[in-house]
Every structure is written in structure tokens, then in C-alpha cells.
Length: 249
Image 1 (cartoon, rainbow, N blue to C red):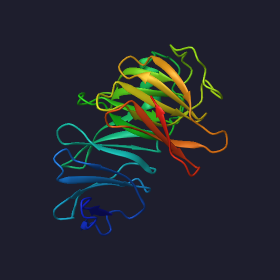
Image 2: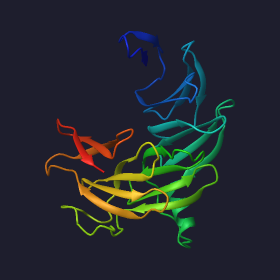
Image 3: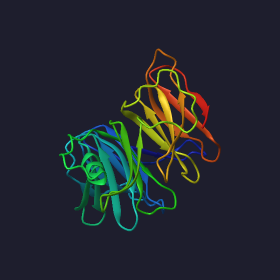
Image 4: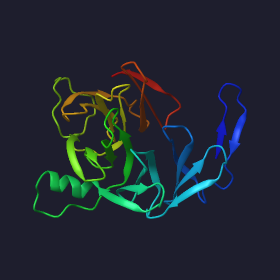
């Protein structure tokens, strides 16, 4: 793992043996003094920027970690293919909460039947201005706006919903799983969920209402990721092909 000075292109710091397996996710602390990294073997570690040393090793995930974040206070969060989001104490490396989207959704909907086995979590999106709220995206038809500490669900986003704007995206498959997701910037007012049907589902973040759908595939290659412009209503998608595409979101 390498920290690079963007202005000069020079290497500012190397982190030898930052992980024992392939690094799968990175995030900066708000003060810029630490990095948290995750790996394909489920390990999560924090690193000091100045020293390059490992500060903590968080153990508990049973599969590859897809996303990490520094939370409020001394919290570190991680989301993995074992269908869990874990909240860790950054000082003790102990798990303080484990969030399972399938169980949280069943409780939110007050279903008496047991929740189905959870799906791999593919994105953990911090909502700007909301200290403990995250959009949790897993490979299911429903993403959640939730507080992973308490397990409370504040909104849901479903690929089965009917969009407010009636135009139907070509190839849309209601009920398909999400493959990725992103929040609009800088306010996070919109959640853009990328479906496995190569359709971008545009939801109001606070309410979960589906506003519109955009077909973003070329009919040949899978679309696997989405990112939002920092201050314009634009989204970029990418995937197995050799092109990036920009969309007015």
C-alpha cells in the first residue's frame, strides 16, 4: 500500500505488508492522520500516516471486505461479503455492533417469518451531515438507509418500486439485485443504485422514493460500478467494457 503526493507524483509513504492478502478497500480518517484498509481475507487494519505503522487489527469478518469508513467518535466501520456491517472500537479493536441487512429489513417490515440468508454487502455510503446514517447496499433487491450501531432502518430502496417519472428504462428487471451504489454530492440528497439489470435507480435518500430509472448498459458488457460528481448532477458508470460513461443524474 502506497501514499502518493499528487502534486509531484512522488511516493510520500509506503506501508509494507499493510495486509496479508489483497487490499480491497481504503478510507481516510477525517483529520487525515490515519488510513483504514481492508483485505480479501476479511481483515481490517488502521495505519498511522506519519509512522506507516499498523495501529490496530480488527478481526471478525468471514469473507472479503468491500468497504470501510471512519465513523463518529472512535468508530471504524466495515462491510463485507459475509453479509454483515461491523462497527468497531478504534482503540480496543472490539466489535461494538454487527448489522445484518436481511434481519434489519425483516424487523423494519415487522415480518414474522425468519429473514432469508443475507447477501454480500457491496457498498457502505456515509450520508453527509448524518453522523450515524449509512446507505447499506447488498446484492439483494433492497438497499437500506440505516444506523448500523442500533440496527434502526430509516428508509428502504427497492428495485421493485414504481418510478415517479413514468418513462421505463429499456431492459429494466424489477426485483433484480443491486450491484453497486453511490450518493450524490455534496448533500447526499440522492441515492443512485446500480442494478444487475444495467439500470441506474435514482432514489430520494431520505424518503426512499424512486424518482426515475436510467438504462446505462450497452447491451453487451456488465456495468459494475457508479460514482457521483462532487458538485454537479452527473454520475459516471464503468464495468467490463473499456469505456466510462457520464449520465445526467
